[in-house]
Image (tube, rainbow, N blue to C red; front, side):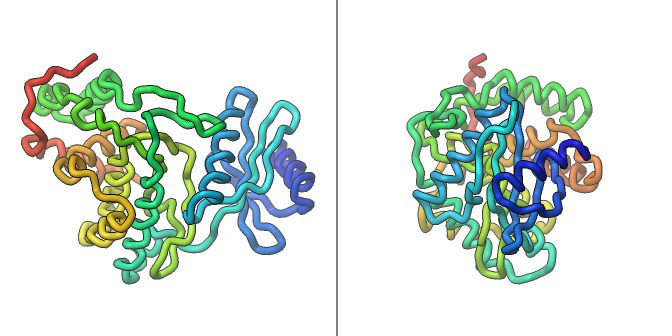
Length: 306
């Protein structure tokens, strides 16, 4: 770790002309410049260079073409065999912090919905992952086989009861994700990734999973994370803000329970968060709630396409 921190300091000094203190969170190093701006720095080996290049291209596009408050690229290049990206980010409370503090939340939820509506107004011609030139690498993002394997794994660990498994395995994902209206999705649009004042969102981070996809999971993911800490918070202002820029898809409104179920399914499949046992237990309970409500999903005799 000390060796890597020394390398990070070298890059920062060479690019920014400063020698700040460094802190680390997951795969990102953070530092605060003399002017008070908080910055992040990522490094990647040669085989991951495309991820760094894509993230930088996305930030530049968002800042150039939209009003969304995204990180700004401050430096990008090569350092020996590594690639690096330096970008400005945000400090202060997140929307999650605000919700847990008991502050009034209607205006800030409206703002969160508006910004996601702006993002989803960027329509894309197909589904897939972004490339460094912001073209789309066409792949099937919601494969039936992956869904069925995940169900089987969660059934083995008793998170999904055996009695529900046959019905859940028969779900035809093409019904829910075959929509051709693909948009630029954030991929992790949750209260913890939104920096907030009392009445507005002033920063959006966590863009690593951005992709071209139907908008449903961005919507469901936000509402799930909103409701997990406080079941009494209404999503209405969020949906109202979203609708100012983008009509809510009718299939999402009709089958919101399914999209929440699908989002939770893969959240739990990634494994428990070691220091958040209570959070995982709440997610398991919610997953069962939505799975039990499968009778509200569309009746279909279609077999899944493998």
